Image 1: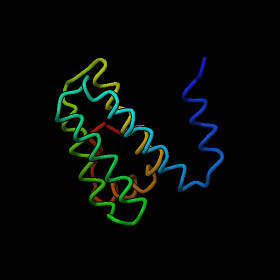
Image 2: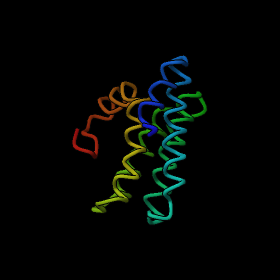
Image 3: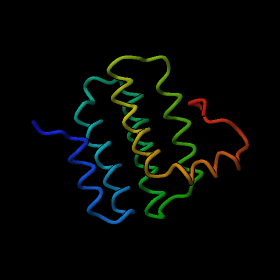
Image 4: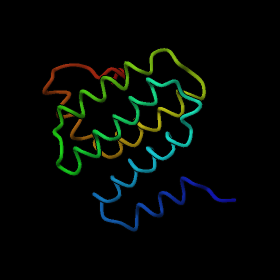
Length: 119
């Protein structure tokens, strides 16, 4: 039996921190694309846009403001959807949080508000 989280963790330990963050985002993007048929259009698109914004932030192609805006759109798109679709799109939040959490916390305090997920 292959344990994907363990394999991913082992891969991430073998690369530098920046590359590991980008690999996490790529893993989440791939998972959402593979499972896209289980999602409605808006949450799927918002999840992929959120991951793309995080990648652009990490590579210096976009600023934190674009990532914060993508985060807001991501949480708005999730609505009250539960079950499998919610679990699939939550992969995006986990990957972005793992990759950019500190930077997002700084932006959150700069904007002076709570994040949409309540934290």
